[in-house]
Image 1 (spheres, rainbow over the protein chains, first blue to last red):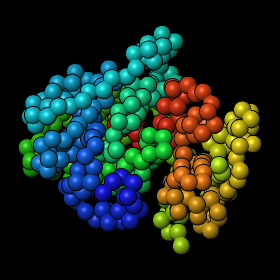
Image 2: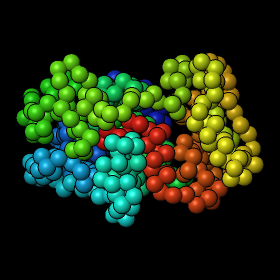
Image 3: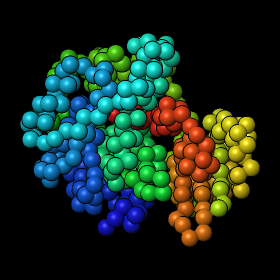
Image 4: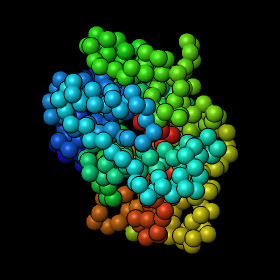
Length: 244
Length: 111
């Protein structure tokens, strides 16, 4: 089956009730040219699950140049543990230099994080995704009630698709909670980023990530100086799902 | 070629801010004349033409653009700058495109 033949609406209904392993199995069976996005955090469960299905999985990771030293060491540890290649992607040098020259190294504290994230993450991600037919992320609904509450298990990724072509995005962990992820990590002796033992739940770039305390949502550990914003552009999901 | 733009009215009856900004940019660039039809996705009305089209195309955001051309599969654009670059042949700054992608997909910054 090719990407063009996949009806993501019907598949979403079918896959919603399936386990992350079943969703991953489906994704890896349908697509040869598929990559797993690994952030260097608890989404390692995807690598573990996928590796148990197919040892030749393709994994990529976005190196923004601002990650914690522990995360870099951890990415290498995962590479060694599973004996896989991890394609580490770097931002465009000229764009980073221009940003730093014009706004300094910590512009995200003054403006917002989007310009920096755009250059350091989204640019290299887009370049990578232009080479793939499908990709897999560790995005979960419980990570951010504001921005991830409606994440589907499978979706047509129109933002990153090649012109006139299809790109399919799988979010096998969409319906899992953080507790389920950590139960899996412990039960399966999956290597994890040591920053988690120091109170970091969500792990991103060093200047934009901090540990959170008991009862705090993991979102509070990222870009804490910015006000939470509503998802302006979304069409109300309930309306779409309830269409006649 | 037929280009349809879908813009949104929010559940509280107010117009979508981003849709207004995009429309203004298109007017200033002289691109709005290229739009053959504008449909409204009214979140208060499931049967509004824009909501029906969004449902049919499995699009979950607005504004978006549908490009139809005889003999070719329809194209859907949810990123405005990608649309103007690929369909209207307007030069765009990559950093602006990347920022728009992130603005429209705030879930991506967790990657």
